[in-house]
Image 1 (cartoon, rainbow, N blue to C red):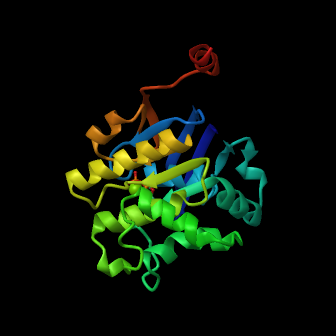
Image 2 (spheres, protein in one colour; image 1 turned 90 degrees about the vertical axis):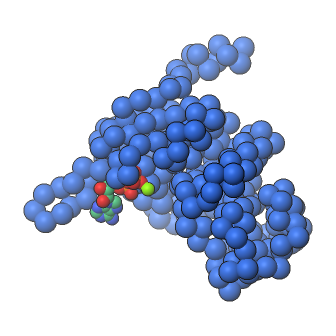
Length: 234
Ligand SMILES: Nc1ncnc2c1ncn2[C@@H]1O[C@H](COP(=O)(O)OP(=O)(O)O)[C@@H](O)[C@H]1O
Ligand SMILES: [Mg+2]
């Protein structure tokens, strides 16, 4: 689903360059769930943005479901994101003037899909918010807002879902329910899930974790070659 090769990201600061990601390479198979872990400032959010095509690398390539993000212009990347990618931001980023239902409908309406109402209601049911459809974000708890954000990210049936510290602002029990929900959506829809977390307990629940330190991959619990994946499914 994702092939990442020799990815680097540098920011210019003053006269010099700040290397935020250094020569990062890995593959993620379709249907995998994995965590990206590492200390604050290690490059996790930057990496997630590059994988999702929200940002462009300094050098290196990202193939997302076979498409080389580096050869696409911004419009083509936006279309690809709309078709294949869901993104859950750490700060939820719900539209405050829209209800829960309307927030979930936004990605469908952006794609010109009619009858967005039924699909959005179904997603809100699945995240346990069937009785909160007409609440505005300020009328919802943090965990409920995060579930609306997850419903919105899943509404287009993305092939891959990226979530940046989706439990970061939540208490432990609420955070565990969010992860259960992501795992359930992974099982039901086969969605590939890439989740950034600094919570080691959450990371070990997922099938695999990639550890970053100072922009380098220093560990990968589940690096699998295509050959071993093929052997496992044979
Ligand atoms: N737009 C930017 N300009 C300059 N430096 C940045 C920018 N975005 C992030 N950084 C720096 O890149 C490093 C990695 O940031 P980030 O990817 O947000 O780390 P993490 O998510 O692991 O905490 C940090 O040192 C941060 O200050
Ligand atoms: Mg971050």
